[in-house]
Amino acid sequence: MAGHFRGSAPQAFPVRPQFSGFMKPCRFEGELRYLEIEGDLPTELDGTFYRVMPDPQFPPFIENDPWFNGDGNISAFRFSKGKVHMQQRYVRTEKFVREREAERALAGAYRNKYTDAVEFKVRTTANTNVFYFNKVLLAAKEDAPPFAMDPITLETIGLWDFNGQLPSLTFTAHPKLDPVTKELVCFGYEARGDGTPDVCYYNISAEGKFTQTVWMVAPVIGLIHDFAVTENWTCDLDRLKVGGEHWQWNPNIPFYLGVLPRRGAKGSDVRWFRAPNAFPGHTTNAYETDNGQIVFDLPLTDKNVFFWWPDAQGNAPDPTTIKADYVRFTFDPKSPNLDLPEPTVLLKRDMEFPRIDDRVQMKRHRHSFFDMMDPTLGTNFGAIMPVLGGGYPLYNCLGHFDHDTRVLQTYFPGNMHMVQEPVFVPRSDDAPEGDGFLIVLVNNYHNMSSELHVIDTRNFSAPRAIVKLSIRLRAGLHGNWVDAKDLEV
Image (cartoon, rainbow, N blue to C red; front, side, top):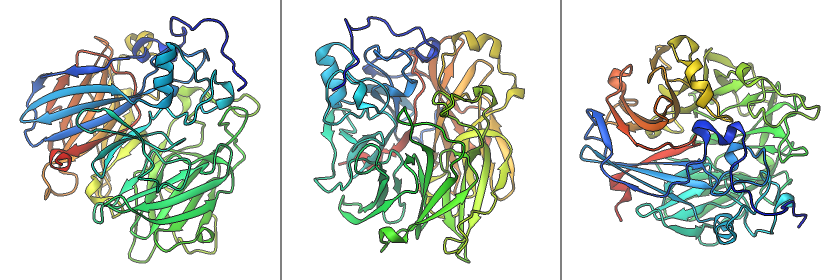
């Protein structure tokens, strides 16, 4: 290895925004029982909200390490009978275990094995998403297979290759669960290793059997972070060309949307639609119309959201100028014209992390929920900025958009607060779409601690309950809700 590690291990985290203020690493493992609750916690909430945050256990030896290069630390908030308990535990990846033995950081720059102090077999931090499938909890980062954990104890089971079935070296952090068949629809990019253009798509049955594998080649070697699935199609997002860092923004490359039949496909069946250069955000959902069109909703901006990775000339946008509109692409997947039609703007608001009622995943959705930045709401930016920390997009409220009426509702948690990604929980199995609760982790900069806000969609402007955590959880990436009945063995 071309090791870059020199001298003794750093004893303190670098004096950088991504390691300061609210973004100072948490590094907590343990249990907090009977969390303090203000308000009326719905007794309908019976299950666990899992989320993951990048949380380095040791100071990095790459001083300007990006904030999301930390070790995966899983939080489990267990709701039952009007009470909430919390557990938190790191994923025992190879990196985590070997660094704990060495008592120092051994991995170098983000997704760059040539900067490591030692050689790893599997280098992942498992820090991007956590989801439940076939009785195990899977912590995933898209550079490797996921790590399995016990959903009750959070003990790490180990690297998960689905009993030897996983065909690719990588696994998406955003698999999609079909609410009808219970299949997990997945893919891996750079699927044959770093720098390879190969994309591998696969379906996994509810019993954990791989039922289809399709290999494709992408038009550029790029980050394919998220995708959407309809009943008959998958849509992969291809963005950002590779450069000196693992990723580098290239403003001259089109936005590509790869469309593949969901079943019975060959690699040659993929069709790469193009649009002008843009940075797509996380997908909301996709579905098919009666006349065979695909409808696809997502945030979209013309700027490089990953501003810490500039283009080849060193250009990067001022982060305060980055805003994503909420857009809808509608197109014919069989069209001979591979140029995507211009999207319809659903909302000209700065938004991200959209979620829907997962019961309508892959079908027409009416309701979507998301993070939003609205500077007019009265956020005390002057007081927040000195303790903010850096490296994470800022959102001061939640949005609820009714796609039928075009009505936008807003939940504003307070003038010293910022929100993380929400999850939606239906009120009951047979409740109408969008009737239920949002659970969101909220940063309280007044007392530098975290809170869980529970919002009833029937009264979206006010919290139904606030759960006080008494500790500070730095910015996370993604999480999911699992009903208690689904956790029963």
